[in-house]
Length: 114
Length: 156
Image (cartoon, rainbow over all chains, first blue to last red; front, side, top):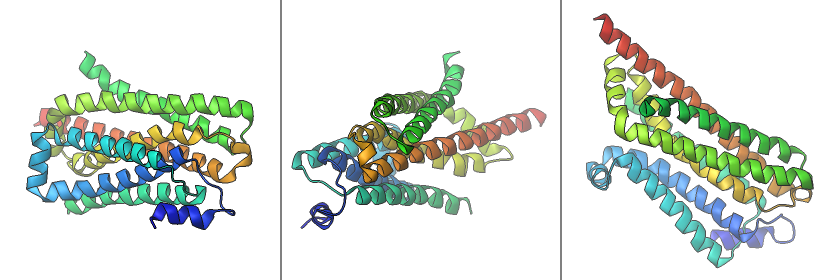
């Protein structure tokens, strides 16, 4: 059983559900926010990754394109599956992925200063 | 000329996006059917404004920021690039994606009777507001770092 199925089952009858499109986009946002945060230390510390991103253009442009492709492709794929999550889970995914994604970036560059 | 104008367009569109996100937040505090129509307009406006802020900044950053970076790194505030610019350019994607998500979460409708959905709208719009504010603050520090770098170069 996937997390999304689990969410839907756990909240059925008691929790308020998001529609399948919104569920898909919220989950996709959370995954992309974490990916974006993780990619920063990885590309800065693994020269092969940074070189590959530069070879595809500017590394920042490549990161943006990767983020957008993951966000929209995952959202469309999840929308097609028609799964739903509870509104409470959606809020949790949104907040925690933003906080963790942001801290991964700010924390990495703060450490790099010293 | 356009190159310099872009530096003004980026924060301007960012602020317009933030104002639209504040509008969504306020409407979501006590949603009404008429308010939801306004909320959808505001959410789409926020997304479009933040996307324009992203595109104008990206164009300048990729083509012209290298010279500013050299001044900042050689100046008295090298951390304006090392921490603030590096964090800003990567954390910007969170704000861009949240602003893109905003019209989708607002589009579900029926917020007056759905406290959970309403909470999601409130958090999404608050996220856009806080991230844009952080970007504006970081931008001011980067700009000051650039100015100090240039001034120290001129003074020596």
